[in-house]
Image (cartoon, rainbow, N blue to C red; front, side, top):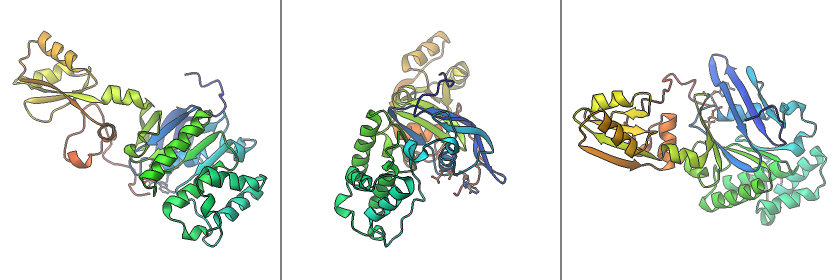
Length: 325
Ligand SMILES: Nc1ncnc2c1ncn2[C@@H]1O[C@H](COP(=O)(O)OP(=O)(O)OP(=O)(O)O)[C@@H](O)[C@H]1O
């Protein structure tokens, strides 16, 4: 990909590292987010998502590397309010002020006409609650208000940290439709989550991080293609099969007489066993849902499979930086 060309709306994170004392929250992270799509920024709690987003938004100074929007660091954008809208986890509102008044204050600060407040209230389904105090809002409504504030400047880039937090299933569906609509208008949407299933139906592309480093970037559909199935093989000669597969696929050993293979289709595994003269007692395909793939990639044990080994092909540092954010 040509990173020299500065496509409007493109977010480029390049060699980004952020240290907090001895904690490396982000470690040499590079990825690109393209306009016209919704990109899920995924990883378990403490993976470094918030720190990365704060670097993109100029709220945290990188220790090394860069994060740019339209080819520039946030601080150098000419009209940041009209370029980028952000919803951060820490978004807070004065409890006694109405939703509408909040947004009108932001309009004044950003030099936008006050009517824009009503437009974004409409966009986020808050018109009927516009005169209610933000302090009376549910978490889901506060998320909508945060999104309304992010949309005020009609930005072509949206950076949303865990926007689905506090939304009920209907709210998540609503947000999915809104983000899709905004991406279809050519905007860049970067949305973080630690729960893939929350954003699975929303995102086109994924950037998966763990321990501050990139695990995978690409279309969600490719993630499913490459990791959507595993082949389970049982053989009295499982050790030799695992050796033959070494370097060609990711291999797990659930039992002494079994090999679980990902990154190679079942027919190819069968063929390899055949050419190596290895006797097989079982050759079967296991399909896994995206949530399971996500857990596998990040080395986390999924609740229903806690205790299973992680694939030999994925290495994870047991000494996670920090842990709590
Ligand atoms: N200001 C800070 N000072 C010290 N350590 C920090 C600071 N901010 C983040 N960290 C640490 O950096 C690591 C990454 O945190 P970060 O909040 O970026 O992760 P995250 O993926 O957003 O997780 P979460 O969803 O739990 O917020 C964690 O170990 C966290 O404790």
